[in-house]
Image 1: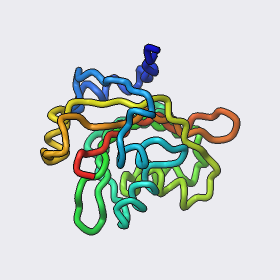
Image 2: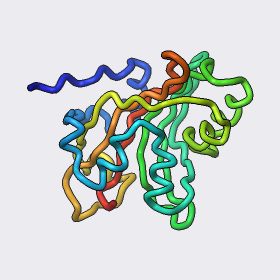
Image 3: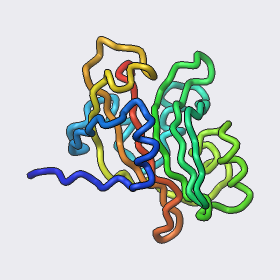
Image 4: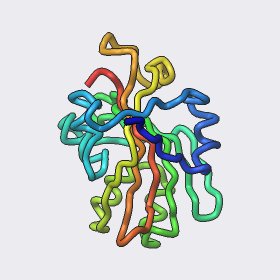
Length: 181
């Protein structure tokens, strides 16, 4: 059966254009084809920040590479790092719908100092992850972010929606992991 790729939101196009991914196509794969340990880190229904923190046994910090805001849509290109060593553990492109968040969380999101998952978890706001699809991308596309690894020529990632309530979308996220897990 042919896998139908998810439709990425048009709002991510400006970030994709300036990101190292550029025009690099994402090769969509079924969840069952995501190998270990990437399956543990990607194929689940909760946030990546807490998954990465548990996997690396470390706090996760945020580096915002680019950001832009248009009305209530906040876009950012980020790298998540382990707090102790500073090792990059995720590259992401995020479309955040600020109006979907309580007013007291918006300044924390816009400050760009704390990963979105950590803000959500600390706030107690009920939300869920709804992965839309899983993909591979050539490792050389993110060689500026992740050190080359003998672990493989491709990186694994997911396209995820963070949802609150019935169907309020908080964020749409492309999340890509390095090959050295």
